[in-house]
Image 1 (cartoon, rainbow over the protein chains, first blue to last red):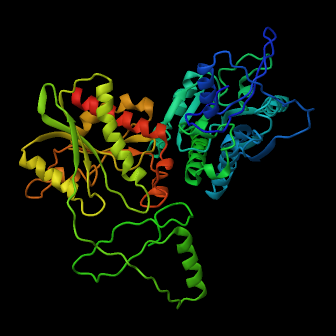
Image 2 (tube, rainbow over the protein chains, first blue to last red; image 1 turned 180 degrees about the vertical axis):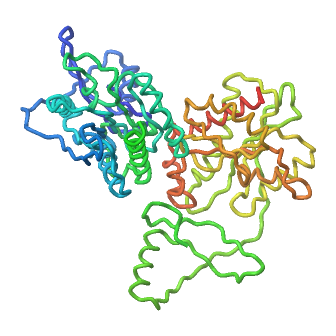
Image 3 (tube, chains in turn blue, cyan; image 1 turned 90 degrees about the vertical axis):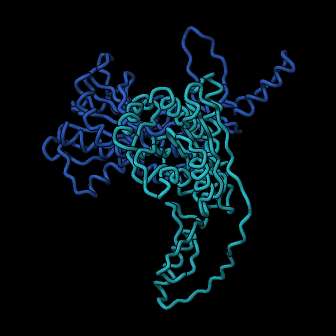
Length: 272
Length: 272
């Protein structure tokens, strides 16, 4: 696989390989854009070129792991939850600073901003730092099962898993009435450039999408899922690559993302 | 002067010092944010601290230099000009890649995009690569004088001098009717995130602002000046510093800026 970046560099971008029952399980490897170009040149010169790749990856036995959950109890509707989350796990070639350290910081910042501003939320504001997004989504599925077990009502779930770049808006998976109501807050975020409110059918993020599935696995159209949309131009410069490190996250862009998410959570909590 | 960046680094950001007749000409020097913090600490520990700075800067004698002008003649209104520009000069501690190499590339790209798309503009589309923006603006003043000498009519002047970052919109200095007309194109650029159309009183950029001055130096409210507004979060990480180098400009963000400016020039040429 040629790596997904606009850059020409020597950083392979890793990821998952999925199989269906009908297909042969062919091995796959990620190669950098420079090496992909090199391979194309070599193949042009010698179409019957053969190469040997030694792949030593393997799946180890499962180990127990955990989501991390924190919340501020709602003052008037504590039984209804607004959840904001990102995921703790990352690919081991980098630090996972954008994917999804940024989402973790965004989530923690939402609670910090509420406390720092002395705001008493009406609903319970919860953050979930999910485990195992990259490799099976057992954190996301586990949280959805936990919520059903406790028979909790969620007003909204929001995920930040698209990096720590300048905020641009939100992908919104909701019914038409809900989408229209949330879109009313668009103009308030417009001065900060976070005003692309895009209707999305697919959900808000891998970790929170299971919340939209009813027990029989049908989609609940009334569950509101939001995906934070930062500027995406640089995302694949870092995604699943060794360049996804702390120094490639811009402090102010990260803070603006947290502020935008925090503002939307406040608006939904107070006015929705 | 503490340097204008959100970063803590060791790159002094240089710039100009201006004097009025009423004030003493005190010397000034730019120091990095790290050194400014260090100085604060030292001053706290020893309020009567004295330091010695040896400044060896001086103003050399003038040398002749030139603006670079290129244009595509208009097919139906060749006598009316739409001008797009940036400036060629930069501070010598870096390469001037963002300030204003990006504006130069944006300008050249506007002509290239018109040719590549086979579009025949109604008005003359001209690019001006200005000289001496940073230190006296004689390129901008010279161009305005040249335009008056030739008695040319300008439909619009647009400057890109805010870096090569992701496009966000345009600052627009125009009368109310003109601003309203240009704002009609906003929704066409909205899908690309370049839709902050902000009314500006101050002009569009140092190089083009002299075009708005009548011969008696009063402001002509009907001269349309636009300033390209890219995302500004990273601008002062590079501005007038040794970090303003080629590798800190993102190719795709730069291309998107050129596309946005080119699209607006096309819309103004065809529909204004």
